[in-house]
Length: 124
Image 1 (cartoon, rainbow, N blue to C red):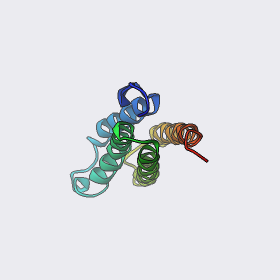
Image 2 (cartoon, rainbow, N blue to C red; image 1 turned 135 degrees about the vertical axis):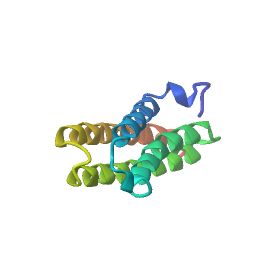
Image 3 (cartoon, helix red, strand yellow; image 1 turned 120 degrees about the horizontal axis):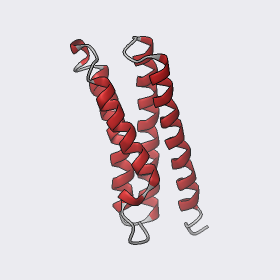
Image 4 (cartoon, helix red, strand yellow; image 1 turned 90 degrees about the horizontal axis):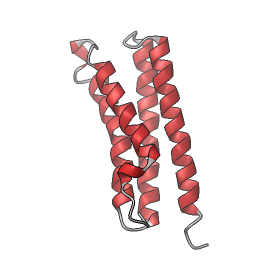
């Protein structure tokens, strides 16, 4: 990052790590048959979003950071897809799935805003 702030100071990272934690906790009660399927995929995609925000923030240069934010955005899209599937399979209630999807949408909007802000720093 251009300044001395850490990725841990970024609100978008804080929200993404919170989402990953909630998904880890919510998926603990899913059927054992999902341990190597949806269970693992949703945990990986949610934690990947937070990890890519962190990695990008610690890279040298705005272009690298932007690239990692794009990857984080893709991981959030995966997470949302898995949340929809978990709801359809009745692993999540509609209310819980809706709250988690709304959180993912909020993080995606925050990422878009951060990307706009960082892009404006690049030379034309």
